[in-house]
Length: 82
Image (cartoon, rainbow, N blue to C red; front, side, top):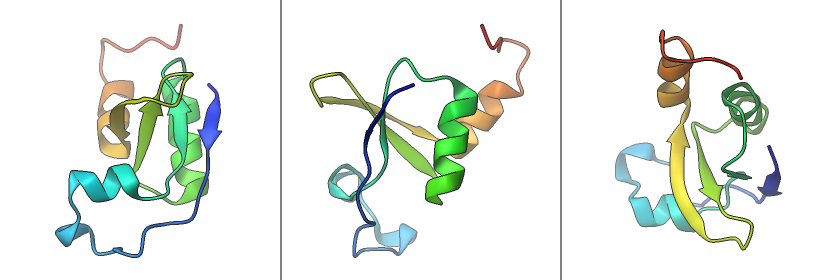
């Protein structure tokens, strides 16, 4: 897992009124796509956020993972930590 960037939170903190654009532009921790589920969950917990932007090495955002989505996947029968 490679931590790409860490910046302060967006001014629009109300999650009910946030858009995808807010999430993309909001300063949030970003990780590369080779992270493990456990590391991603640990980064989220330490940053006190519910999602992470997933970026390529050149900084291009390729996706978004949520704490709930990762926890569900981690607890499923399909998950292995290898």
